[in-house]
Image (cartoon, rainbow, N blue to C red; front, side):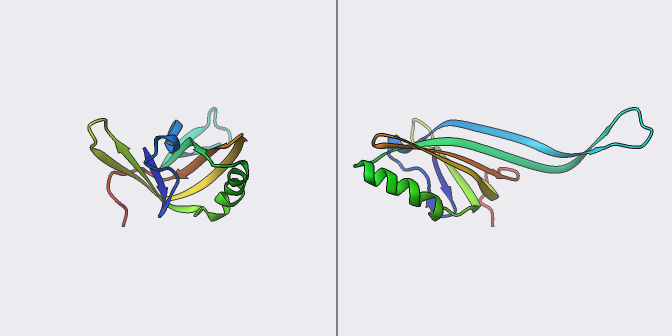
Length: 134
């Protein structure tokens, strides 16, 4: 799977930079009503959907210095909001695109192990779609 935030690609076609530990959480936004003298709370579905997607990407660097420079400069170069695009590819080579419009990058966590950097991302948005948002 390849992943972009707007035009910034987080992965590459190189298998060493594909995401792992892919997590998907979809939930409906609800509101809780606590009414006076009521025996129980009442929940109201607000018809809003929130989708959170988390994943890790491991990158191999040519030197420890280039690894550290990438770690310190990557986050500030990321667009923190926009359309997140996911491209899935089957073993036969067919590709499928998924979109999360109006998404925001909530967490970027970095770890360094020698020449490798591990980046953990969490993005949230509304309803995922198969159609490219306008």
